[in-house]
Image 1 (tube, rainbow, N blue to C red):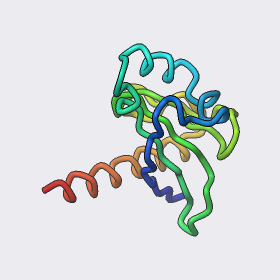
Image 2: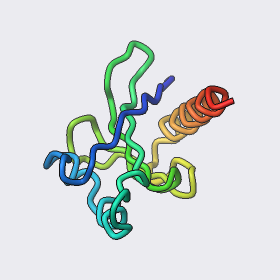
Image 3: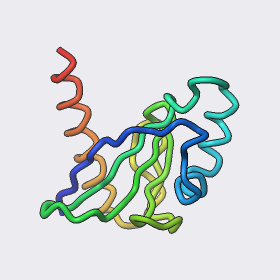
Image 4: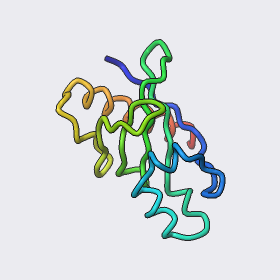
Length: 113
């Protein structure tokens, strides 16, 4: 299984839809606690398979901790802790998530250079 991360913009707190607010849950509370500009601490990703089919929504707080949800739902699939995919018994999924995050970070870092 090969997954691809696509970064998407994080809306301002007052522009977030109800589904996104529900998906973010405690991550949103943490970010809102940071005050103005706190939404910059949240990274949103669409996670797709090789064919481009949207499978999951990923939300990270400070690039390290967060959750993977079935696309368009609040159904928890896996977690991220300290920048690592965790919280699932599906080792193939975890391996694919780790590879996709490493690939995204690599391409993001090279784009900055």
